[in-house]
Image (cartoon, rainbow, N blue to C red; front, side, top):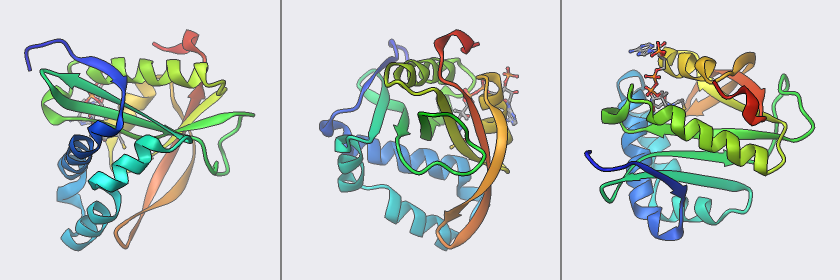
Length: 179
Ligand SMILES: CC(C)(COP(=O)(O)OP(=O)(O)OC[C@H]1O[C@@H](n2cnc3c(N)ncnc32)[C@H](O)[C@@H]1OP(=O)(O)O)[C@@H](O)C(=O)NCCC(=O)NCCS
């Protein structure tokens, strides 16, 4: 992890490595606090070469990856889609996934990736960026607060068969409010 970390839009050739990164980072973050059968079901239905390939090709999804020394070490996915109650704005966009590989936590990479996501949202014409984060993820919530998000509600996110409470957070899409 000595080289320069570069952020770029994902391409289909990234699908296999992105699938591996997505599974690895989800398990790192949440594996210990979910039942193995729920984790296995979530992983099986969310991550895989074909799944990430179709996400990369989806016109309503924007996937950015961070590459360092030829390896993917973080990614973010933004998506246009259904917007839950509590999220305002005429043109909201969702940060659907935001994951940094564990060795890179606490090193400022997440802030750089968030800036890229905010720039993309602004360029795409969004006025509000929103996301859901598990209520039992204090570091994630603290990170998003640091990035200018505030709590606007809550909704349910199902991991496997387990309905979990996600905190809904939102912020303006303008670049000027990036800390
Ligand atoms: C969430 C994530 C992207 C944040 O990136 P990061 O580099 O770890 O972020 P930071 O180190 O800046 O931490 C953010 C804040 O969390 C708090 N924090 C740090 N370590 C913490 C810990 N162990 N427990 C609770 N809060 C913690 C601090 O307030 C910190 O801000 P500060 O350093 O200015 O005090 C990263 O931790 C990650 O990928 N986690 C796993 C996936 C995830 O949870 N994604 C988001 C939800 S889908």
